[in-house]
Image (cartoon, rainbow, N blue to C red; front, side, top):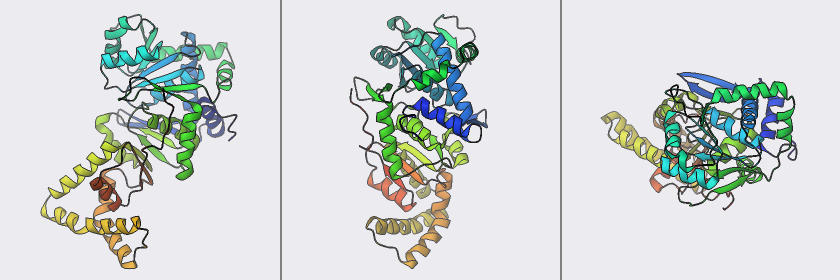
Length: 386
């Protein structure tokens, strides 16, 4: 891969689409209980038509695109479409209130928004009078919106259709837009919860973070990742775009937050990225349930977890485990640890990342006993200050 020729995310996407086309899967999304696959060609075509559609609506150089919703392929199509048009994405977590969204949209001077559903549309309508720069609000989930007549609103499919027509009428325009991007272009604004101002990121800063991580623990096309949160934070931007596009792994999107555990068990991902609080809560929940289970399960947990703790401690001290230690752990793994990992969707996990502060001691011991390769990202991803 030529670093100069592929120095932006749209260029990386174009490279992957040209190289792998329909031969490799880029994404999977569970919709109505069925996993739907997107090849690299599908990914490219979706971004192409959305980018051209946005351009037809007036999205131009330097514009900011507000994106609000749960993690799903349209979020990624939207961000890359903004990049193609030399604009930047401004990610917003779907749980934010209308007032919180107003602050971010106004501070970023967002002219366009792409949102998931009626809930997010209603928030925008509530604050639209205070956002005079906002030109269009596009929604990708149509449920409940058929009777809305606000001229600010437009359906996602309508924008894509505009792009499809534009592609027919102006052959090569999309490719020219992609080719004209630069590594130092601003591609994303990230608003941390404790910051009064957004942090800007260029393609180069996010790629540098990704390359630093991939140099330590490489990913490849055989890997499956489940990004739990939408790419609102620096960490999720780095993983969801830079690491994904560089490694050509498959991103898997759960159907909805409530089905996360079930969907993850189905996927059994090899790469897992979660926040510190998630890992800690999960460890506490599993241990509490096992200690409150029937007599047999309780005994198994109390008898075999110390075996995992002992092996983890020897590993931490760089002490080679004895043959007896290894045999004992294999037995404990079959009886206790392997079923726990399967239940958590971690049977195939070869790289686990914890984003945020260091894990507490109890959670650390728990995952080390399971022999999970859990790495902490605190301070690893640098980003760019405001």
